[in-house]
Image (cartoon, rainbow, N blue to C red):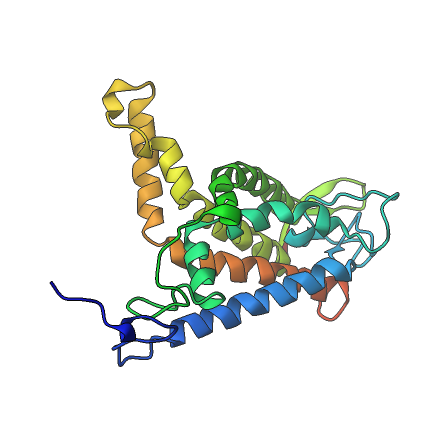
Length: 267
Protein backbone atom coordinates (compact mmCIF):
# COMPACT_ATOMS: atom_id res chain seq x y z
CA UNK A 1 0.00 0.00 0.00
CA UNK A 2 1.36 3.39 -0.97
CA UNK A 3 2.00 5.84 1.85
CA UNK A 4 1.29 9.55 1.72
CA UNK A 5 4.43 11.62 1.37
CA UNK A 6 4.98 14.85 3.28
CA UNK A 7 4.86 16.89 0.12
CA UNK A 8 1.17 16.02 -0.31
CA UNK A 9 0.36 18.27 2.61
CA UNK A 10 0.85 21.98 3.11
CA UNK A 11 -0.83 25.01 1.63
CA UNK A 12 -0.53 25.16 -2.16
CA UNK A 13 1.41 21.91 -2.57
CA UNK A 14 0.35 20.11 -5.74
CA UNK A 15 1.58 18.26 -8.81
CA UNK A 16 -0.86 20.17 -11.02
CA UNK A 17 0.72 22.20 -13.81
CA UNK A 18 -2.34 24.15 -14.90
CA UNK A 19 -3.39 27.60 -13.60
CA UNK A 20 -5.43 26.11 -10.75
CA UNK A 21 -5.13 29.36 -8.81
CA UNK A 22 -7.00 31.42 -11.42
CA UNK A 23 -10.45 30.25 -10.32
CA UNK A 24 -10.01 31.03 -6.60
CA UNK A 25 -8.43 34.42 -7.38
CA UNK A 26 -11.25 35.41 -9.75
CA UNK A 27 -13.85 34.25 -7.23
CA UNK A 28 -12.21 36.17 -4.39
CA UNK A 29 -11.98 39.37 -6.45
CA UNK A 30 -15.57 39.16 -7.65
CA UNK A 31 -17.13 38.27 -4.31
CA UNK A 32 -14.91 40.83 -2.59
CA UNK A 33 -16.01 43.56 -4.99
CA UNK A 34 -19.67 42.71 -4.42
CA UNK A 35 -19.23 42.72 -0.64
CA UNK A 36 -17.50 46.13 -0.73
CA UNK A 37 -20.12 47.64 -3.06
CA UNK A 38 -23.13 46.27 -1.18
CA UNK A 39 -21.69 47.32 2.20
CA UNK A 40 -21.16 50.84 0.89
CA UNK A 41 -24.70 51.03 -0.46
CA UNK A 42 -26.17 49.75 2.80
CA UNK A 43 -24.45 52.51 4.79
CA UNK A 44 -24.96 55.15 2.07
CA UNK A 45 -28.67 55.15 2.92
CA UNK A 46 -29.77 57.53 0.16
CA UNK A 47 -30.84 57.61 -3.48
CA UNK A 48 -32.37 54.16 -3.45
CA UNK A 49 -35.72 55.01 -5.06
CA UNK A 50 -37.15 57.28 -7.74
CA UNK A 51 -40.51 58.09 -9.26
CA UNK A 52 -43.90 58.97 -7.80
CA UNK A 53 -44.01 58.39 -4.06
CA UNK A 54 -40.24 58.25 -3.67
CA UNK A 55 -38.45 59.93 -0.77
CA UNK A 56 -36.03 61.67 -3.12
CA UNK A 57 -38.72 63.28 -5.25
CA UNK A 58 -36.72 62.51 -8.40
CA UNK A 59 -38.89 61.92 -11.49
CA UNK A 60 -42.25 62.50 -9.73
CA UNK A 61 -44.16 61.69 -12.93
CA UNK A 62 -42.27 58.46 -13.37
CA UNK A 63 -43.13 54.89 -12.37
CA UNK A 64 -41.74 53.94 -8.99
CA UNK A 65 -38.25 52.41 -9.00
CA UNK A 66 -36.92 50.86 -5.79
CA UNK A 67 -33.48 49.30 -5.32
CA UNK A 68 -33.62 45.58 -4.47
CA UNK A 69 -31.14 46.31 -1.66
CA UNK A 70 -33.87 48.35 0.10
CA UNK A 71 -36.93 46.25 -0.68
CA UNK A 72 -39.20 45.97 1.18
CA UNK A 73 -38.66 49.58 2.23
CA UNK A 74 -39.09 49.75 6.01
CA UNK A 75 -38.83 53.24 7.50
CA UNK A 76 -38.65 53.39 11.30
CA UNK A 77 -38.21 57.05 12.38
CA UNK A 78 -37.11 56.13 15.90
CA UNK A 79 -34.01 54.25 14.71
CA UNK A 80 -30.61 56.02 14.69
CA UNK A 81 -29.84 57.78 11.43
CA UNK A 82 -26.91 55.46 10.65
CA UNK A 83 -29.22 52.42 10.53
CA UNK A 84 -30.53 52.24 6.97
CA UNK A 85 -33.65 50.36 5.83
CA UNK A 86 -31.34 47.94 3.99
CA UNK A 87 -29.81 46.79 7.28
CA UNK A 88 -33.22 45.61 8.46
CA UNK A 89 -33.77 43.19 5.58
CA UNK A 90 -30.54 42.32 3.73
CA UNK A 91 -29.48 39.77 6.34
CA UNK A 92 -32.24 37.50 5.00
CA UNK A 93 -31.28 37.25 1.30
CA UNK A 94 -27.64 37.60 2.38
CA UNK A 95 -28.04 34.61 4.69
CA UNK A 96 -29.52 32.60 1.83
CA UNK A 97 -26.41 33.18 -0.28
CA UNK A 98 -23.98 32.78 2.61
CA UNK A 99 -25.33 29.32 3.45
CA UNK A 100 -25.84 28.27 -0.21
CA UNK A 101 -24.09 25.00 -1.07
CA UNK A 102 -22.37 26.50 -4.11
CA UNK A 103 -21.26 29.71 -2.37
CA UNK A 104 -19.90 27.74 0.55
CA UNK A 105 -17.59 25.93 -1.87
CA UNK A 106 -16.72 29.25 -3.54
CA UNK A 107 -15.72 31.22 -0.48
CA UNK A 108 -14.18 28.29 1.40
CA UNK A 109 -11.75 27.93 -1.53
CA UNK A 110 -11.19 31.59 -2.41
CA UNK A 111 -11.11 33.28 0.99
CA UNK A 112 -10.02 30.48 3.33
CA UNK A 113 -8.06 28.29 0.87
CA UNK A 114 -9.73 25.24 2.38
CA UNK A 115 -8.88 23.68 -0.03
CA UNK A 116 -7.69 26.14 -2.70
CA UNK A 117 -8.59 23.67 -5.49
CA UNK A 118 -8.86 19.95 -6.22
CA UNK A 119 -5.62 18.06 -5.54
CA UNK A 120 -4.02 21.17 -4.00
CA UNK A 121 -2.68 21.22 -0.44
CA UNK A 122 -4.65 23.09 2.22
CA UNK A 123 -3.73 24.64 5.59
CA UNK A 124 -4.54 21.42 7.49
CA UNK A 125 -4.06 17.71 6.90
CA UNK A 126 -7.33 16.36 8.26
CA UNK A 127 -10.98 16.93 7.46
CA UNK A 128 -13.14 18.37 10.25
CA UNK A 129 -16.31 19.07 8.27
CA UNK A 130 -18.71 21.91 8.98
CA UNK A 131 -18.54 21.62 12.74
CA UNK A 132 -18.62 24.03 15.67
CA UNK A 133 -19.44 27.53 14.41
CA UNK A 134 -20.02 26.24 10.88
CA UNK A 135 -23.05 24.28 12.04
CA UNK A 136 -25.11 27.39 11.29
CA UNK A 137 -24.84 26.42 7.60
CA UNK A 138 -27.58 23.86 8.33
CA UNK A 139 -30.19 26.65 8.49
CA UNK A 140 -29.94 27.14 4.71
CA UNK A 141 -33.38 25.60 4.17
CA UNK A 142 -34.96 28.23 6.43
CA UNK A 143 -33.29 31.05 4.54
CA UNK A 144 -34.79 29.44 1.42
CA UNK A 145 -38.28 30.08 2.76
CA UNK A 146 -37.41 33.74 3.31
CA UNK A 147 -35.88 33.97 -0.18
CA UNK A 148 -39.15 32.75 -1.72
CA UNK A 149 -40.99 35.57 0.08
CA UNK A 150 -38.49 38.10 -1.26
CA UNK A 151 -39.13 36.90 -4.81
CA UNK A 152 -42.79 37.88 -4.41
CA UNK A 153 -41.84 41.29 -2.97
CA UNK A 154 -39.37 42.03 -5.76
CA UNK A 155 -41.90 40.90 -8.37
CA UNK A 156 -44.37 43.44 -6.94
CA UNK A 157 -41.64 46.10 -7.20
CA UNK A 158 -41.20 45.20 -10.88
CA UNK A 159 -44.94 45.65 -11.41
CA UNK A 160 -44.81 49.06 -9.72
CA UNK A 161 -42.00 49.98 -12.12
CA UNK A 162 -44.49 49.51 -14.98
CA UNK A 163 -47.29 51.65 -13.48
CA UNK A 164 -47.06 55.30 -14.45
CA UNK A 165 -49.05 58.15 -12.84
CA UNK A 166 -51.58 59.94 -15.05
CA UNK A 167 -52.92 63.49 -14.91
CA UNK A 168 -56.23 62.23 -13.57
CA UNK A 169 -54.55 60.64 -10.57
CA UNK A 170 -54.70 57.10 -11.92
CA UNK A 171 -52.06 54.74 -13.23
CA UNK A 172 -51.19 53.64 -16.76
CA UNK A 173 -49.02 50.80 -18.01
CA UNK A 174 -45.60 51.66 -19.35
CA UNK A 175 -42.12 50.21 -19.73
CA UNK A 176 -38.76 51.90 -19.31
CA UNK A 177 -35.23 50.56 -19.10
CA UNK A 178 -35.65 50.65 -15.32
CA UNK A 179 -38.71 48.41 -15.62
CA UNK A 180 -36.74 45.86 -17.63
CA UNK A 181 -33.80 46.01 -15.22
CA UNK A 182 -36.00 45.23 -12.21
CA UNK A 183 -37.84 42.49 -14.12
CA UNK A 184 -34.56 40.90 -15.23
CA UNK A 185 -33.41 40.96 -11.62
CA UNK A 186 -36.51 39.02 -10.54
CA UNK A 187 -36.03 36.46 -13.32
CA UNK A 188 -32.38 35.83 -12.43
CA UNK A 189 -33.10 35.60 -8.71
CA UNK A 190 -35.94 33.18 -9.45
CA UNK A 191 -33.65 30.95 -11.52
CA UNK A 192 -31.11 30.97 -8.70
CA UNK A 193 -33.70 30.24 -6.01
CA UNK A 194 -35.64 27.59 -7.95
CA UNK A 195 -32.39 25.79 -8.79
CA UNK A 196 -31.49 25.60 -5.09
CA UNK A 197 -30.50 22.15 -3.81
CA UNK A 198 -32.74 22.57 -0.76
CA UNK A 199 -35.76 23.45 -2.90
CA UNK A 200 -35.10 20.42 -5.11
CA UNK A 201 -35.07 18.25 -2.00
CA UNK A 202 -38.18 19.95 -0.62
CA UNK A 203 -40.39 19.41 -3.68
CA UNK A 204 -39.39 15.81 -4.35
CA UNK A 205 -35.84 14.88 -3.46
CA UNK A 206 -36.97 13.25 -0.23
CA UNK A 207 -39.56 11.05 -1.95
CA UNK A 208 -38.72 7.44 -2.78
CA UNK A 209 -42.01 6.71 -4.60
CA UNK A 210 -43.90 9.56 -6.26
CA UNK A 211 -46.92 7.37 -6.97
CA UNK A 212 -47.15 6.56 -3.26
CA UNK A 213 -47.54 10.14 -1.96
CA UNK A 214 -50.18 12.84 -2.32
CA UNK A 215 -49.76 15.10 -5.33
CA UNK A 216 -47.07 12.71 -6.52
CA UNK A 217 -47.27 13.57 -10.21
CA UNK A 218 -47.18 17.31 -9.54
CA UNK A 219 -44.23 16.89 -7.16
CA UNK A 220 -42.41 14.76 -9.71
CA UNK A 221 -42.83 17.45 -12.37
CA UNK A 222 -41.57 20.11 -9.96
CA UNK A 223 -38.64 17.91 -9.01
CA UNK A 224 -37.70 17.39 -12.66
CA UNK A 225 -37.95 21.15 -13.25
CA UNK A 226 -35.82 21.98 -10.21
CA UNK A 227 -33.31 19.30 -11.26
CA UNK A 228 -33.02 20.80 -14.75
CA UNK A 229 -32.35 24.25 -13.28
CA UNK A 230 -29.99 22.80 -10.68
CA UNK A 231 -27.59 21.66 -13.40
CA UNK A 232 -26.71 25.34 -13.95
CA UNK A 233 -26.98 26.46 -10.32
CA UNK A 234 -23.51 28.01 -10.42
CA UNK A 235 -24.46 30.07 -13.49
CA UNK A 236 -27.64 31.36 -11.83
CA UNK A 237 -25.69 32.09 -8.63
CA UNK A 238 -23.31 34.42 -10.46
CA UNK A 239 -25.72 36.03 -12.92
CA UNK A 240 -28.23 36.77 -10.14
CA UNK A 241 -25.44 38.30 -8.04
CA UNK A 242 -24.48 40.60 -10.91
CA UNK A 243 -28.16 41.26 -11.62
CA UNK A 244 -29.06 42.47 -8.14
CA UNK A 245 -25.95 44.69 -7.98
CA UNK A 246 -26.65 46.21 -11.41
CA UNK A 247 -30.30 46.78 -10.49
CA UNK A 248 -29.25 48.72 -7.40
CA UNK A 249 -26.65 50.65 -9.37
CA UNK A 250 -29.19 51.59 -12.05
CA UNK A 251 -31.73 52.87 -9.53
CA UNK A 252 -28.96 54.78 -7.72
CA UNK A 253 -27.88 56.50 -10.95
CA UNK A 254 -31.47 57.45 -11.79
CA UNK A 255 -32.26 58.64 -8.25
CA UNK A 256 -29.08 60.73 -8.14
CA UNK A 257 -29.95 62.21 -11.58
CA UNK A 258 -26.72 60.92 -13.09
CA UNK A 259 -28.72 59.30 -15.88
CA UNK A 260 -32.27 59.57 -17.18
CA UNK A 261 -34.37 56.42 -17.30
CA UNK A 262 -35.23 55.94 -20.97
CA UNK A 263 -38.94 55.34 -21.58
CA UNK A 264 -39.64 52.62 -24.14
CA UNK A 265 -43.42 53.08 -24.31
CA UNK A 266 -46.46 54.14 -22.28
CA UNK A 267 -50.07 53.24 -22.96
